[in-house]
Each structure stands twice: as C-alpha cells, then as structure tokens.
Image (cartoon, rainbow, N blue to C red; front, top):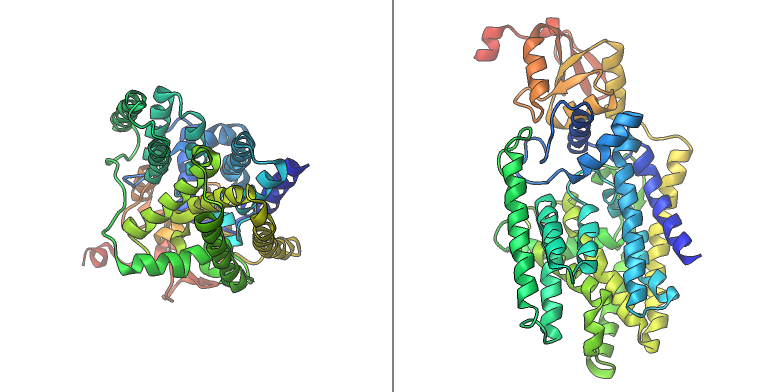
Length: 467
C-alpha cells in the first residue's frame, strides 16, 4: 500500500511535464533530435551535440522508443519517468534493509516522491543529467562491495554528470568513520583504476561519435554569490519553501506555487534534529554505515559542490544542480525516525512539505485538465507548418524546439551556427527556401504572437549579409 502510494505521487507530479509541452525547451529538443538520429542510424551520439559534457545516456534509452513508437514528448520523457520509479524502488529497498520500518521508509521517501512543482518538472526533464545521478548514486551504494562494477558505473556516471562522484566520496567517508578505510584500500584502488579506464575508453570511443569536442565540466572558484544563490534561491525552490511563479522557470502556467512557511518549519526541524543528536541521543557508529547516512552524505556533498564550484550560483534555472540535495532530506528523515522522540515532529514537517507541494502539483494538473495554456512556440510551430516553411533560421531557444515539436517537418537552426551538423548543411543547401523567425517587426514579415515570420523573399541581399 505504501509503495503504491509513493508510485502514485510520482505519477501525479510527472503527468503534466511528461504528457504535455508544459516544460520543454531547445536543450531538451537537442536530445530528442539526437535520439531520432540514433533511431534512424544516422549518427551515434555519445555526448550532447555542441557540448563538452553530458554523456547522452538518456538518448540511448529513448532511441528504441522512438524507433518503435515515433518521436513525441511522451517517448522522449518516458525513460526519465521510469528512472524516477526506479529511484523510489531503490530507496525503499535500501531503507528497509537499513532497519527502517515501512512507515518510516515511506515518510523518508516523500521529499523525492513529491518535491515542489519546479524540481518535479526537472526530475523528468530530458536534459542536464537530472534524474540519472539519482540512479547512479543509489546503484553505487548497492555495488559498494563489487569494486569493478562500481568503478565502471562511476565512470559512466561521471561523464554523464560529474557530481555523481559524490557517491564514491560518501562511501569512502563511511569506511573512514567505521575504521575500515585501510583494510578496504585494495578494493577502492580497483574501483579507482576501473573508473579511470572506463572514462578513458568512453572518451576515446566518443571521438568517432557525432559532434564530439572533448569532455569537461563547469566550475568556478567559491564566491559569496554561491552562498546567497544556494540558501536564498535554490534551496527554497527545491523544497517549495517560497512562492515561485512557474512561468519564471519555463513552465507554461499562470500559477505560483510554494510557501515560505515550509522553509521556516524545515529550518526549525533541522535545528531540533541537530540538538537531539548532539546532546540527547547521539548517532551510533552503526547508524553511519547504512543507506540513511549515505543519503545524507550524498545530499550534503551536492550542496557543498554548489557552494564551492557552481558557475551560475544566482541563476534560478540551475536548480537542477542541487536536486541531489533532496536525498539529504530523505536520509535525515530516516535517521530521525529511529528516535521515537523525533518521530512526531519529523512526520509533521515532512507531511507539511508534501501537502504544500502536492497542492501546487494538483493545481497544475487542474489547469491543464481544464485546457492547456497557450504555448507560444507551439503556436509558432503550427504557423510555420501552415506556411509550408520547410527550412527556418531562428534563435537557439526557438529553433530546435520548433524542429522537435513539428516532428522535423520544419528544420529550424540558429543562423550563427548550429549544434546539429545536418541541419546546418540543409539550410546552407536551401538558402533560397529558408524562412527567418525574428523578434522585431520588418517589412514583408507576418506577425504571430511575439514572433515575426519572414519568407525567403524578404531576406536582405547577400552583400548586405556580408556587410
């Protein structure tokens, strides 16, 4: 019953972003185009087109669905949804093996099963390595006694999203606390060697894939902005601890979701937990050797990575960089459940957060059930199809979005260079047939919402382009 309830919550929060274009953009569309290329055996992409990071694990999961059922928003995001269910299953198994009762385990999983609306959309977002790190870090916990398998897993995980390595650091710290780090030196060395060989092999193989230019990560030195961005922006968004206008996060909706009460209550709960663990019932050493402690360490590690390394600390759109912090809440709830004196307050805080977040999600469901809000880029896509505009030059955040939405009936690419080589070649070969989408009025162009659709005949002369 409890597992079914958790699965139901995941289904409720995933329904709108998985079945509609409520949260979709050109970055996600690029992954969809990659999956289409792979399904048609045009290319064998390993990293996101035009990027030096993000191993395209999800693309290889989508390609069979595209081949069997065609490219759509559902087949694009279905693997992401299934990974969410896999995370719930792994959390349940790990916490139950940790000695947490069924009610305590279900309560601990709630922060992941029903997060705030914004992170809920990101957990099924086909871009940025959002849900994959959850799968990788939990799988690493179950493979912690198998050094070769663990090393291979971490190699793939690292190239997909580098902060997945938090799992290995958490395992090392747990061994240190248990006093067995030295005796496990050999298996850890095997894991490290296997990790290095896996990364090197995948990078070598990627040189034969499409549009690969090397792989790296995005970092910068710590700054006070990181502190402000984490506690003032990202954490509040993550837990539903502040009102957030969904449209500001590229979610097509008129709603605002979240409540500052959640943030205040959560901080108070953390203070109570810290006081109890520090002065009344300290954590026992054995408690720091299971899934609960592992989740806390991974979540804290993710928060630390953001505080120390995030390149865009004040950008509200990079809440995906702190998603793994949800696992810290899961682990803390599980540890607190072991103390009868903390059960009531823990249940109250987690349930309050869940109810607030569920309310926002249900309101979004009702909004789409009564008639999906107008999405400007879908209107533009329909207008281009109606005009039989086969080739289109547009800005990045318009181009690939339109291409995917139209099922590539419209080939749209940025004029200043594309991430999709075949699109560049097609537009170059059909310059005289290429429409242009602009955001400023120009003679001879049609107005569609905020867009200007300019037919090929309205293009400036070639010498003007050169000038």
